[in-house]
Image 1 (cartoon, rainbow over the protein chains, first blue to last red):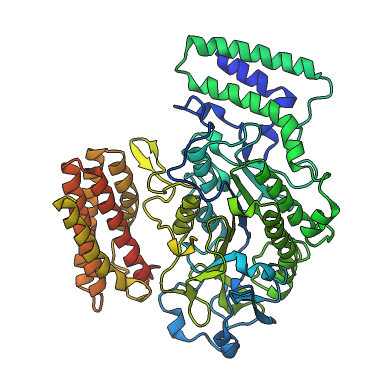
Image 2: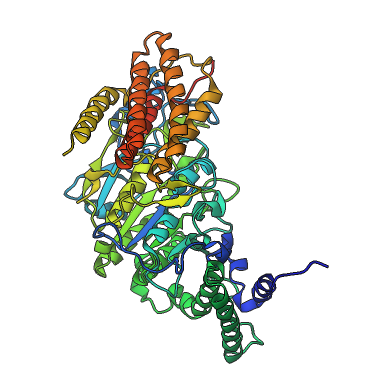
Length: 482
Length: 138
C-alpha cells in the first residue's frame, strides 16, 4: 500500500472538495494549480514597489489571434494598390523566407477605402470605422517584427519572448515584479471568446520557471467564467468556513513546526484566495449592473460584437478592481468565410474573414477606449493591440494573405503613451519593416517601463542565472513614451 | 567617471557604429556549410551569458565566454572566406571585443560593466541575423 505523507493526504483531501477545486475547472489550471511551487517567498503576491514611478497600473493586452492583415487595417500603401496583380518585385523579397504555405502569389489588395483621421492624420481602412475615431489616442508601431511564421511559435514569442515553452509570460513577470493590488482577485487574468482555449493554450499565460502563483487565471467565455465557483449545494457557508478554519489551524501548526516550508504557506494563501473569490470573482465579471448605454458602447447589442465586447467590458471591470494584467484573446468566428470557425488567419477569403473579425472587435475596442477615458482610467491603464505577426502583401489562394513576421503594425494607447504618433514604417508594399524595427522584446521592455519596471533589473534567480523578461535583448522604445 | 567606464563607453559607441549599418539591409548568401550545431550552441550560450553575469556566477560566465569566443572566431573566419560578407566578419569581431571586455570586467568583479558588454555581444548576434536570417539552405 502506498503511504501518503500528511501533506499529500491533506492536499488530496482538500482538492477533492468541490467548492475549492477551482483549479481543476479553470483552463490552464488557474492560479491554484500548483501553489506548492511558490518557493522562497513568504507572500509572493504581496504588493512590491516598482523601480521608478509608474505611468500605468494595469495593462489590457489585446491579442488578435490568427494575425490580422494590418495592411488592410492601418498600413495604407498606395504603391501596393498600384502594383496589385503583378509579381512582387524581387527587391522587396530580398532576405526573407517566403514559403510558409502557399509560396508567393501576386501582389494583392482587398476592397478597401482609406481615410486619415484625427489631428494626427493616422490612416484607417473602412474596416475600423469606430476605432478610427480614436486615432489621436493611439501610438502606432508600424515596424513590428518577430520570429517564426507559424502561429503557435510566434504567439509564444509574443507572450513569453521565446519560441519554445518554458519562459514566463509577460503577465507573469509583471505579477512577479509588482505583486497583486487586489488580494481578492487574481492579479493576472486571461479572457477569451470562442468555444475552446486560444491557439497555443495555457503555455501563453504560464509562469514558466517563475513560481506558479504568478501564472494567469483564465476565465471561460459566457455567463460562468469560473465553473463550480458556487459552494456545493450540500455544504453550508458555516460548514465550509469551519472546514477552512480547521484546515488553516492544522496548516498553521505545521508551519510553526517547519517555518522554512514556504510551500505550505503558499497553499494556505491559495485556499483563502479561493474562498474569497467565491464572493468577488462573480461580481467582478457580472455585467448585470452595467447600464444599457455602456453595454451598447461595447457592442453588446449586436450579435457580431457581443462576445468580444463582453470580454472587454469585463476587462474594464477588472481594471477597476486593480487587476494588473488582463490578456484578452480574440476568438474564432463561424461566419468568417470558412466552413469551420476561424480566427483572423485569412489564408483565403480575406474580405469575408476580416469583415467579420473587424466587425467583432471594432466597436468593442473603440468602446473600451471611450469608457476608460470617461471614467478617468485611460491615464492609468495601458491598452496594447497586438498579434503574433501580420500578413503578406502578396496574395494566397487568390483572395487571402500568408503569414508575415517581417513587418506589421501594433499599437499602444493609455497612460504614458505618446498618443497620436506613429513609430516606424514598412517598405512601399508593406512587406518588410525598414529602419528601426520593434521586436516583441522591445514591446515587452516598453510595457514594463510604463509599469515602472526596468526590464534589465526585473530579474529572477534561476539555477544560478539571473533571468529577465526580455531574455538578453529588448530596448525600451522611447519614441512611444510621452 | 572612471577611466574604465569611459573606455567601455567609447568602445561601445565604436562598435555600435560599426554594427548599425547591418540593420535593414538583408543579404542572400549560401550558408549551407556553416556548422549548425555550433550556431545552436551559440544561440543557447548567448542567452546564458548575461544571466550568469547578472547573477555574479563568474565561473559560469567565463565558461559561456569561452564558447562564445570560439563561435565568434569560427564565424569571423567563415565569413572571411565568403565574397561580399565583410560586414559579417566585422560583426563577429565586434562580438569578440564585447566578450573580451566582459571577461575582463568579470575578472575584476565589475559585473555591471560585464553585463553591459554581454548585452553588446547579444546585439551583435541580432545585428548579423538581421542581415543573414533566415539561413537559406541551398
